[in-house]
Image 1 (cartoon, each protein chain N blue to C red):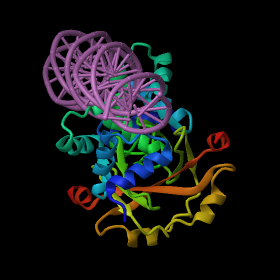
Image 2: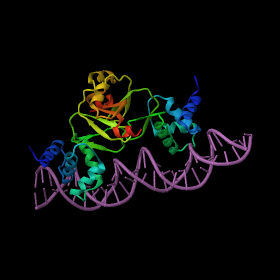
Image 3: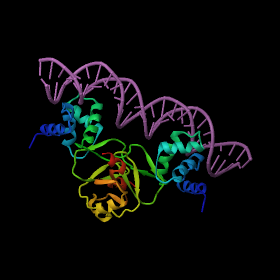
Image 4: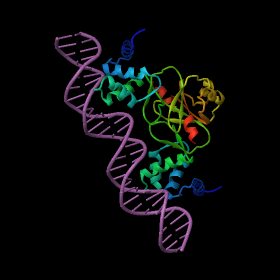
Length: 143
Length: 143
DNA sequence: TTCCTGAATTATAATGATTCTCATCTAACA
DNA sequence: TGTTAGATGAGAATCATTATAATTCAGGAA
């Protein structure tokens, strides 16, 4: 089993990314603890080891890691407020690249009973809304 | 069948909201066309009828309408970048109020075959990521 | 109808997250 | 070790959104 250090150097090499000290530290800060990390969290953690690091470097590299599949972005949706008038229960299909949203009127792909069993106790799923992420036709044609 | 004008006044009255001209126009701009509307879209549309309207009014009232259930927010997530190191396929459970994210390791509540049939042709769902919205225990206890 | 009052609206300033700029530095390869 | 393309850091710039404060208005009472 390779050290975290070696593991990152291998990953970086595969992506053609320079394995700099900063990248090493950023990557390890995310990998070290399970769960979801905000930029501020990562920045705070990383500064404990490398106080001179810039916030821009954290942003740049988190984006880079997501682009290269080393990390995953939680909720890759449009960052702007979107609103709709359709109040009937329905779901959304979102393109992770161009952030386009399409409606999914039929919703029987979700087994609500199973979902309720798998969710933590107390989580209110009386009107579950689901968003499914993928690549729209146009974007998947490009890649 | 009531006019759109009357319809809005009824809705507003039910929520205890003053039925101002601006609110009327904003509401109708969203309702008039199906689909998903950004603030800029609504603002542009609304200014055609009421050029003096302020962008802040559009923001305020869209938020108000969402709070009162007259409109729905698409992707009611945290708007900040979140990242995770867990690359194994899994889904997310998101609280629409406090925006907390929890992992759903088991994923058999999604019927991928049905989903693929219901999605528009060409939409790439080879690694579908699903996010389910509800109210976490803490938030549903409050209300 | 006219007046009153609290709420709504407006223009603009402020905020907060993210990205850009560019001078400096460094990893990687010869 | 020297070279160079690419990475970093500090701070400015940008974008969406929210707060501020002065003005205006909706809706009820006279």
